[in-house]
Length: 311
Image (cartoon, rainbow, N blue to C red):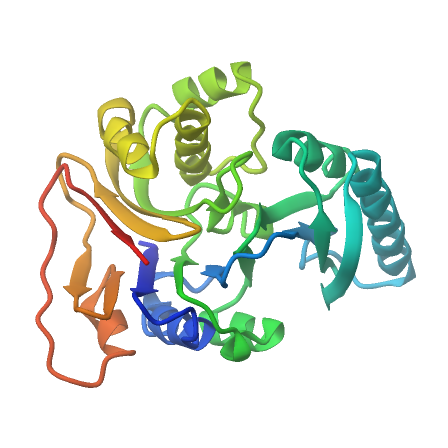
């Protein structure tokens, strides 16, 4: 019983406190998933590339060996970035096991990510010109506080609260998922895919890699695979309803859009508010009301629905 939420502020120049708003939405649904919380947040795009890299899991024992391993992995990761052809403009330590690098790079995104992840126990959480993914163990308020998200300004985002059912409680199995290897695309999902293994084998045969055993990651990589072959985000989402089996509702975000898709049974809940200046959607109406303090009308989209909103 996980919970998903998303919001996009239109025609407001990316000046909204998207981190604070997404935190409020997700915290209101803490009962749906207390194990981990994740955010995919979007700032105004830049020419530079931003990569967020995890060097260890938050559950790893803290000792001298941990500190030594993390420092070594960071040196190796930065070395691999340069080996892939990136110029590192700046780096920032997010916490003791995560850092962000701002790059000058015009090469192949897949090659860059694969180079970094050749360092053992290292994972590229997100990569893009405006996307940053934050995810960790705990509820939305604790994760937001640890990563300083109340001060994150942007235009749109999605988030997820997770109740672990079939995979470990760790960062690798927390949502959102970056749509490797397509920059600035991420996915959150509530439900279950029944043809998970079939699509994983097919996508791996096309050269894609997976960071987890979570079926939600399949959706992200599936969309990336179709977009690499020329589909728009909306077209790729429509195809997903034909190709992916199961009971699911998912949200997908790109540099300038937010979309939602529901399978043909529409068993997983989704409540939607659409106004002139913003669109907000979540598994429960309480999440929307957490950021809108006036009377509003909401509705639940029909089955086999794909809806996309742009900035």
